[in-house]
Image (cartoon, rainbow, N blue to C red; front, top):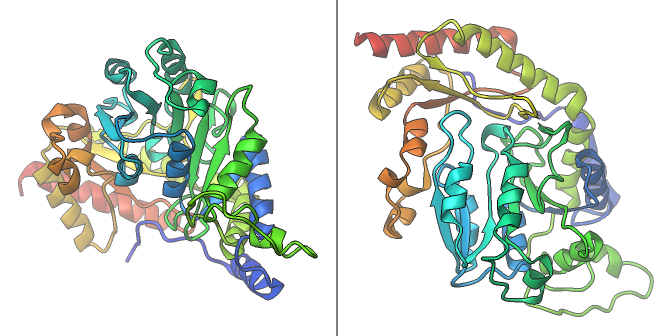
Length: 404
């Protein structure tokens, strides 16, 4: 059985987790703070806040910006539900727009068409780890400032739409010759179990707000929001004579514990040296196999100014139906190869259907979804296994295409 995306759990990870357990700090403590600093250095941003999920990271930024009922947040119809769910949590309206036909990412033209005086946030998503066109999206946000209606002091201070990027897939990706993270107002990485860099569960907010904002001050505010509105975390309270604390708002329980940060510190240390190169090798092997096939539409993983994090190999089969795609997946699964689909567009999900979103309004999203199969990509996937996966995919596709 070839799994889809198991985490890399080796002795280095085990030793670091054991060290965290034996240190006396298993909740948010020195390892989490160190991990935040290391991610900030890696991504080239001033401040990073680590949390228990990327979902928490997206929601905490929406709440910091004061997104509420009556507000609109623009995001792609082609994304995981978490991107839209956080907007619903805030009482606001997810404004879904269609995506590009080549790289799965949000359409600039559709963003421009969707901006209204109620738009508070644009939330692009780097599908599969391929960066969106951040510069153009930022220009759209800045160019729409005359429409922007500020409802609180933070919004007045920014004076325009906030650009909050769901970079769950793209840590280590390249945009304009630098690591992704500092290209928009805030970016949020995911460290879920199936991600390139995992902490089991977890996420990180990269803060890049422009002057006159202080990203250090925003970080302090977010720390309070992420821990029940308490003005001291456990680490601060453990200093001599510093037991006393206050609760200044009804916050949330979103902090990352040191046990998870311990995994992340090992993962980050070897990310550029081991993880990304191996994932790129696997991509190149798949490209070598499928580039010979007329029916294969290969994923976009680099262009003039961007390079993917090689998170998902999003293979599309030309000129097939959703039903045919599903039959292909069944044949592949019958050979004990695990594949996936990324993602079911939001209008296909029962909850978003119930809100009135219709799949026919997003034809490119549906076409991308209906023909897409995600192939296994992970560090311990051997070359022989990649070759076997490729062979099984080719046989399965061609069997369905031939009608046999």
